[in-house]
Image 1 (cartoon, rainbow, N blue to C red):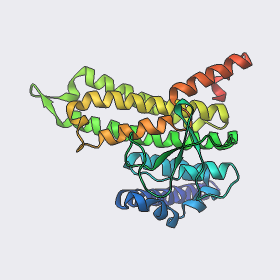
Image 2 (cartoon, rainbow, N blue to C red; image 1 turned 30 degrees about the vertical axis):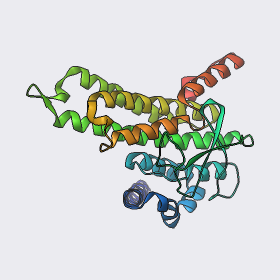
Image 3 (cartoon, rainbow, N blue to C red; image 1 turned 90 degrees about the vertical axis):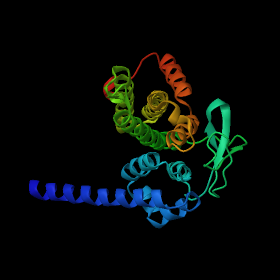
Image 4 (cartoon, rainbow, N blue to C red; image 1 turned 60 degrees about the horizontal axis):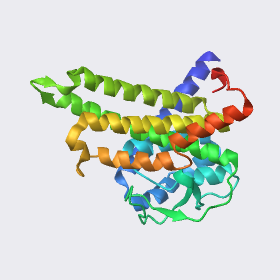
Length: 273
């Protein structure tokens, strides 16, 4: 029985790795306006409905790592609300605004000119379970883009030298990279533990804070090159700012969690978070 279980787990891990490779290849090679259809052809809809606990972290983390984008957050929220996927719906954004992530591929935001976000009238109040599922998905996306920002900064620090010494040897640089890694690892641990509304809220807040930490520290490590249009860092920073604002920013969600704790008069035990 133990051997059979081990073989089964190994086979599952191999299949998941192959699926991840296929998704990564599709995200890096498919034009942005075609990625939604390409993911559908790979079975994204079936994955979401049949194994959401595997599909959502995998797909959204890879979207962050590759810098790709697709309107699949609509599918996660719609599915969790018990509605048909492949549509769109108004989603709350930071500052009391509402947006629609279009499936047309037509860009509509100045903050991240690549993604088709458009302002919308206030939508209907979403089911708490749908909001929680959307927040977890966005959290994985933020973790993915944070890891890529960290990788870009780490590579630069190892390759670039000053005064005949690799930049990575300087303590201030190493501290920034280490703090970024700790924030990302903490956010991922929170996402893995999130099972309810409050846990999902805290996970999204942690992922948003980690992404903002990564953006700040990695920009400092990269210096002027990080501001150039030719470097990928600025694309990930813009993406992180948009994703942080969607379904509540880290700052707003932290306040919301505090208000909840005050209203209930107690805080959840760490084992429950």
